[in-house]
Image 1: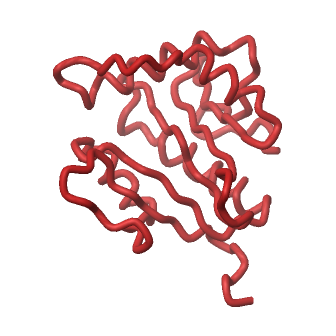
Image 2 (image 1 turned 120 degrees about the vertical axis):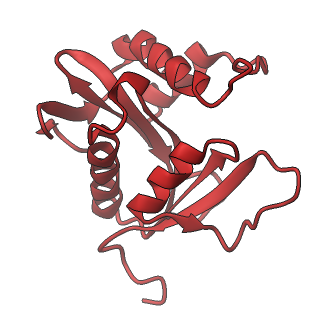
Amino acid sequence: MIGDRPAEGTVIRSVVPAETGAVISLHARARATYYPDGVPQDGTDWAAAWRAAVERPDGQVLCAVRQGRMVALASFRVPEGTAAHTVKLFQFHVDPDHWRTGLGTALHTACAEQWQADGRRTAVLDVHADNLRAQAFYARQGWVPDPERPPVEGDHHLFLRFSVPGGMNPSA
């Protein structure tokens, strides 16, 4: 597990269960930016989902804290039914008031370091097709379209893949 690490006045660390409310609030603010007509209400109980993610023994939720406030978060784990060397980044959000401050890059770097330490070679994610800002961010971090999940007409998400730096060679 990653310990506390400063990054430009920021601490990146694991989220604890008592912080679920802050996680939900940050998640809602970030998601609202790419749903101009309002976040769809699909029946997801986000409080329960985030609580489960934080408490899940086979997953991790990292956060970036600046001046005592949670300003970014990432949730990842090996998805069920996939190879152990692949990790999925399920959620990655930066508070919109802190975009373009280096927080996303610092948090992504911490995620990649954790994936490398855990022996992961590949990370995957899906990003909302209309979220061009996030797609540009992921491209700058080295994510590419996932050749195993090409875009399908009418799909609302794009599937991306990341080669974990220093990860074991898949043919090894």
